[in-house]
Image 1: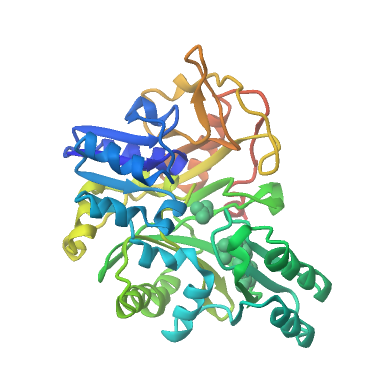
Image 2 (image 1 turned 90 degrees about the horizontal axis):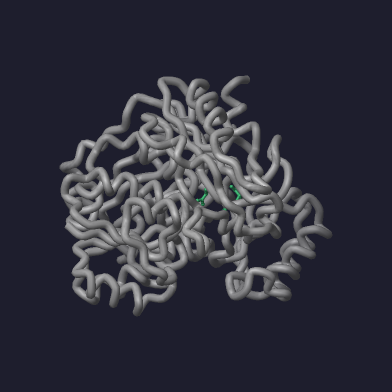
Length: 424
Ligand code: AMP
Ligand code: GLY
């Protein structure tokens, strides 16, 4: 098979690494890719939102399967365009990717089908949102821009003043663009967060090993929200009881709800869960692999990922026995200092070859590129995802942090407490 991966981050490098292992795959392409992906796939400089070019490239290369990594193209309908061109595609169509693309949609779905989540109201008019907040005295409260906002469209407001200012930012100043045309105001919940990824074929769902992200930029969960500074998997907080609850009330219920709405979901559903005192609640859905969750989950997948993805397309996922190695993994993101606000790019990266041939160590590239001399340089906020596998989480954590010392670049920045909660 010839396979094309759409995307160019750490998640796509993890997907590409997994796809490359499949005996079914004879040729791997990626658009736009990055300097790491370029070592295992043929990359072309096509943006993920350039749908016509992506489709033309897939046709020209006679690709048999396209895998779409990021949220933006999925929510924008890239899967539909690829399918229309007669090419098989892994990833939800536009009418199903709305599960991630609109918070108002996903909240209404959960309410309609009694899927446990925080209480909420939806607003199209800032005046009504303000009136609602004026009458409420329960704080903190959570404001969410309806649409995609690079993971930044969520504001946790501790006072009425903050909340009123938040409505202005989202709905009037349009800080997150048209994502703020609608807004959800939601009950604030507390508890530990867990990410659960799953394969879905429209009717059957198979859960992957759980993971935990670290979203804030600085140690001790301080600083701004980022795309994710590191992950570990599995999460020891995702107990058998939690799993049983989610299987009963959340996972299949979500797949069935989408089907009942005429929005059959095929691809990855990522459940962002909060383990509250009252039980697990859905914080959000994503319609794709998490980044950097994929970097700790996929290296432990025992199945041929291409076979699993094809079964999702064909509706035969029930015949797949999804299996993960009985190991743990930790990923520490090496970022450019200043991320997520402003940072410099173009610094040469040294030491990448130290990962060559080392079993259980992975250096997933995110923001990397080749400079004119052909050397690998930093090219983004999140640069590398240094990942290690081991028998225990603590051992994996130790190995991952050791490996962070193998690579050097100017302005290298990382959190030092990824997985620290495990030690307590
Ligand atoms: P989301 O994009 O909906 O996952 O929100 C981003 C982050 O905001 C989550 O990972 C949580 O840390 C936080 N968050 C979202 N909704 C709530 C809520 N209802 N209560 C408390 N924290 C929340
Ligand atoms: N790491 C969180 C996400 O991919 O949305």
